[in-house]
Length: 375
Image 1 (cartoon, helix red, strand yellow):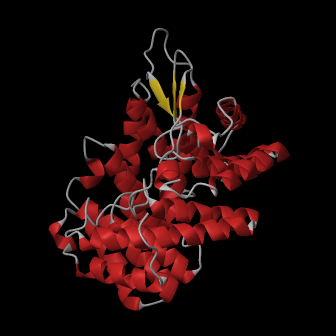
Image 2: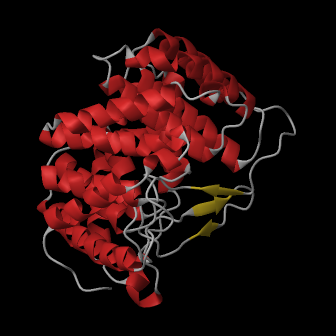
């Protein structure tokens, strides 16, 4: 791994200046929402009115973009943008009736979710849960409380006889079982979860725990949990990936969250065993981390360790967060020196905005809440 530099605040300032200097108006309005979330978080951290004004300006451009709220196609990236818009609207609620600005989107996404329930592929299922996350971020608005019970009932319904199912079922935070269960856990905490919802969480956790495997560093078996399982044979596929997208750190976070809903002390113990085991993995071979980004890189791992530290109080997680913040800085230096930032500054999951948010959260030493749009 590259040499670790000093000064998280200095690294954040470098990213901040890059983001401010970027020509955001060259992007379509929906692609500016990630930066709008970043600007709001900068305001929350330091209270500068210019950051708040920028967040409002970018959100208004999004909310009034022609056709955006009624677009006929909603791939994963657009649904992530919708979730970010919902998160931001709730925080701009005191100004210009921001939550009401997405009313058309509420109706569009409810119809899209109902359509997705008739699709059998893994991408459609993942997008359905993205829409559930969107409505969880819209609570307590009437539209969300109206649409969510309908969508949860559709989720609980038996699939039609002979319906095809995806061959490989992913298990991680990116677009897998962990992501699904976290949405259902969130809804349960918000008072929208039914007994069927809690049962789905329970069954999902049981299924995940049944896939555990002992780690063996000598045999290059680094992960406790596989990253996918074959829907028919049950064959699990393991890898060294430690990232936010599909690594064991995310599963440790899921188990902590499940413990709060299911009140099973054993889940908290397993979460600690899994999470603390990941701290032993710091090399490229044992993590497959080779970038600074949130989704598949060092920033996402650092951020998850910070969440685990706040939840469990385990100092070891704080040390893990500091290590991976250092790795984030190191990879970031290489990426910035390589020329135009790839895959680009705009995306929170894969771009400079997401790395900036992780560094900003560390500098502010605060939970700025932006990850609710992804978890």
